[in-house]
Image (cartoon, rainbow over all chains, first blue to last red; front, top):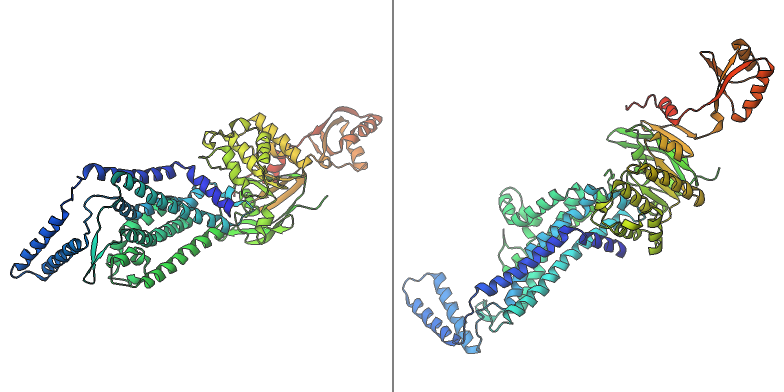
Amino acid sequence: MFNLIQNEWMKLWHKKGTWAILVILLLVIIGVGVLDKVFMEEVNDSDWKQEQQAMITDANTQLQTPDLDEWSIQMYEEQKEMAQYRLDNNAAPQVNQSMEGNMAFGASIMVLITLLTVIPGASIVSQEFTDGTIKMLLTRPVSRFKVLTSKLITIFLFGFTLILVTIVLTTVIGFILFGTATGVDLTIVDGVVQQTNTMKDIFLTYVYSLGDFTMSILFAFFIGTVFSSPSIAIALSMLFLMMGPMIIMLLQKYIPVEYIWLTHSDLTQHLRKEFFIEETTLFMSLAVLGVYAIIFIALSFMTFIKRDVKA
Amino acid sequence: MSKPIVELKNVTKIIKGKTLIDNLSLELFPGQITGFLGPNGAGKTTTVRLMTGLMRLTSGTITIEGASIADDYEKAISNVGVIVENPEMYKYMSGYKNLIHFSRMHKDVSKERIDEVVKQVGLTKRINEKVSTYSLGMRQRLGLAQALLHDPKFLILDEPTNGLDPAGIREFRTYLRKIAVENNVSIFVSSHLLSEIELMCDRVAVIQNGKLIDERMIQSDEKARMKLKAEPFELVENYLSSNDYVFTTQEGIFLLELKEDKVPDLINELVAQQVQIFAVSAVHETLEEQFLQMTGGGQIV
């Protein structure tokens, strides 16, 4: 099996398209970092304590206003609480871009990484058919099951490589361009002010983004294997990845969408506590995704193993 | 005759109600080159695909060295080297990387073995260049190299000389003959080039409409025929029939089945009968004539 993965990896990196994918990713990461550096004005925040004090005064003044709506009241109360927290705990706000901020940007482009992995994912099987190389590949003392497994593993290896490149590069570039954070961000959880754990948030964003990542790759791989057409597979999986929530909105009038993978594949819904349709548990989402993942994999293998090769 | 290395028994393939291969049985032997002839659409490539496991059998069995292609695929195919139609290689990689790729799918193919095969097929100079820069003939050579990598006991070649120049074809033929004799490899060559098959093969199997319609040895002297022009006609006719020769007559010329070594005897006897002999010549019936005869003019049905 190791030999087969080695083969697939070799073929993948001999294609120009694979290098184009890597270049696009590098350009986005480096480009956004450099643009941030060039266009963002450095703010001198040495007198942040006075500013926080001013914010408290401002909030108090605003709260005096008669007939203030409930939403505004809450906003000014929170502004007051946070400013007070900063003064009490000597916690300066983070006003400039930082290494941590750049790393968070890395986590936010998981959608791009997914898109870029879908392309080889859709073509790794289908291109063997369109090129006619499939008959050279399958007339070997290796079962079709192993051939397909090696291809699936290779695609996930490729995707994880892109993720790793993103993590390392956003960290290094962030550190070089901006340096580590000098302040802290605050959030209010259940009415209590807390310091944000940025690293934990970045980590969770990466982990929860694996939902879309995994499902899109499996879907592209499945379509590419069944229809042996790279273009159909790439188009369909990109459509579902980009328009997934919209498709669900449209469909929900007609069918019970909570049993469709598109409703659940964006697991960051659970992180943000904002849901496309209605709140579900993480367990429910994972269960639905698991079932679809098994269906996609099973159909890919069944068609690939049974098919008569005429290419 | 030794034991067959490949056995096809009652092989049938039906796709969407259409019978592509109909109850085909064939045995292939070590050290023998078997030609597989048939008009376009007769089922040559389908048969090759069934033998290599690319397509599934509807019924019947195919065994290679005793291992069934349907039930014990990995064992059966490990002894087989294949070129199905054009050898499609990974164009974006070098010839050498292609061979490395395929060698990893077999057991025990060393780097030395790869170099040896590359040398044998005459690609040493260009092997590190991308396949996309290769001519058709060079791709054909690379195709042969990948089929030979693992030293197969059975070689299946579908239209192998397609794209080779005459010198290349000749070299190719000599090479196949060599591995058949020296390594006792059984070779199965499908082609529409009759003259090729005739020069290359020991034996020919003819397929039409998915059925095996003939199977025979090539260059067998059993069928040797002689053309005889002699007079007086009646005398010769009487002599031949009374001595149990098999013959036909055509415009005063006798066509008789006679081995070459019996010709002097016949001449002596006819001369003793005061017969005047004008000409005796061997009738060389080409495979093409036989083939057209068998397949009824090679019409595609």
